[in-house]
Amino acid sequence: MLVFRWGFSAVLMTLLFWYAGKAINSGSYAAIGGRGWRPSSVAGSWRWFGSRPVVDWVGRAFGSLYDGGDDEVESKPFYSIFQALRTKGKYLEALAEVRRQLDKFPNDFEGQMFPGGVAG
Image (tube, rainbow, N blue to C red):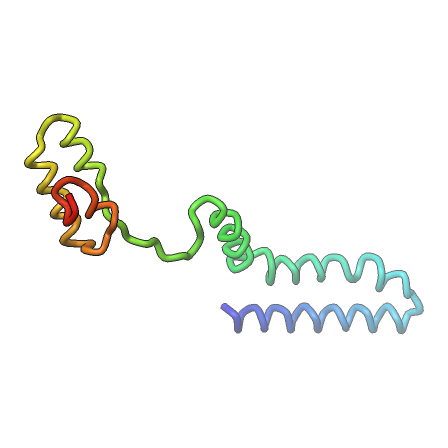
């Protein structure tokens, strides 16, 4: 894709300089600042900046405001199952869930303080 962009830009610049040289030789300097530069600059900027890399960059910038970007998510234990089981009165299953989470995360202070944890 990059090679295509280089080729496209080379063709555009060649045409642009040819048109500018023709306008200068004819003595029409207004053509350089007017009609001659606009179409080629719009086409060139669209080819380089209106395509996927820029759209991806802008999209990632706005998306990271909502999803945290490319940062790694820190894994942590889920004690919501324990709390739901305890609320339902299923105490043995709740204790088993605390122990299951502590097997995965043995140094988790919150889990150690729950009943069935190391300190509980």
